[in-house]
Length: 105
Image 1 (cartoon, rainbow, N blue to C red):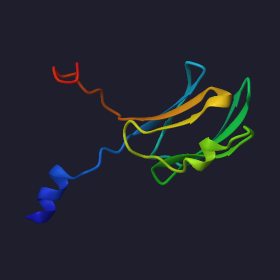
Image 2: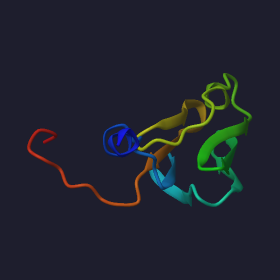
Image 3: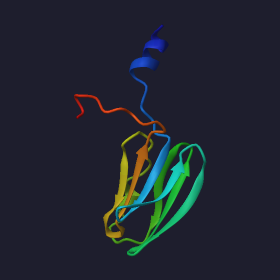
């Protein structure tokens, strides 16, 4: 019984895809259920994006501050990794569109 309650109330909202956005344009949409490594070239440099075991991270970048690499892995819906020097944003999104309710509006 406790397990059933846990599934309904405490289950995390894991995302299904990560959207890779460079300077306002979506350049890739990677599924989190397929492991891959993708190099994204931007006007400011490059970032290596790794999807492994349902998580995404930036494993290598040639930016000066390396904040994107230090962010680590993300996997929950709405989490982001940013590389401001390159204008890169990686966002976890769910596989289904959710309706906007009156409270969120």
